[in-house]
Image (cartoon, rainbow, N blue to C red; front, side):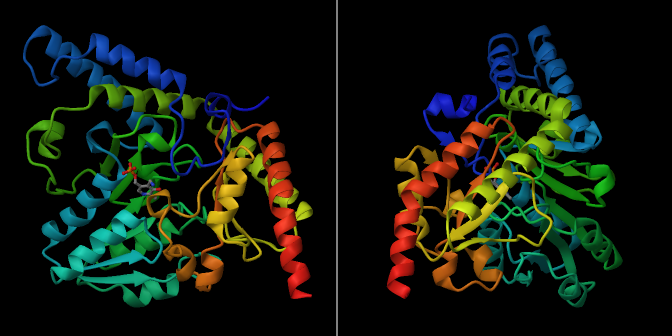
Length: 391
Ligand code: PMP
């Protein structure tokens, strides 16, 4: 049996870190909200108040899944907006002009950092080691009381390597800085609790866990008076704009589904990832797995096949019915090597060879076996040629 996502697209879909197929529960909740709760939740009349109640109910379910208070949850258009709100808000709020972030943050956050540099904000990057693990020693030496916010992702989207959020949060606290966690890749793939994380701000996105695109949230710890990015009275004056109720309802349904099966989903994805990793290593020479010695997300396998170029590998795999990505989807299509792998000390040649295979809760053993068979059929001749040439 192949997964529903694979059947729908007629491919084996191994790109769940880029996005996931909306689960049927989310689609149904969205249709229901579009049909029954289309009034404006800010309207005083009956239909408006019904929509307001639907919004409150959805908010409570998302908050329960994320381990935050309902009043701490600010719905946004996704994690990119949430990350912008966190960093820009922290700068404005603190009056400080320096931020720290990991060297492997999402391209959207890196681009924001670049823009801020142009405006005179000092941005220091916390390095990672060859396994993609954040250097706490470097974080310790960079932290100071001029830092507005420290921003570290919960798990890297390319390698799946987990970051020491609680330790960095303690450092941030010691300097009076806010701690922001981009938890976009954690939700639905690891236990997640805003309350227990030690973070002041945390971003998530619905479409990474079976919800729709265009909706996410920033969690803002109670008592943190973070300024709004978009002005307006919605979301307790923290995010203006009529609420995306269909999206939020879909998000809540996806959270409910994930909450009900999270432990089993994690075990399943870990087992299938192990099957894939072992199968590829056994069938092909020169397989190198990134972050193999680090603690990683259960679903992510970032690897290279010798020095075969990622674009060539992905083309061959897609021809054989397997779809995946090289590094971040946002930078795919470009010929730039991944900034994440460069930060891990990889050469540009190796970094351009990296392919990310990311599994979903519904990826089946048959999907994995198909991927191993396809990779063996398509890549073994190329690798054998390479070995022969080198001999
Ligand atoms: N942060 C991380 C770690 C991500 O993986 C992504 C999605 N590629 C984002 C932020 C952006 O999320 P969104 O698509 O909701 O803006």
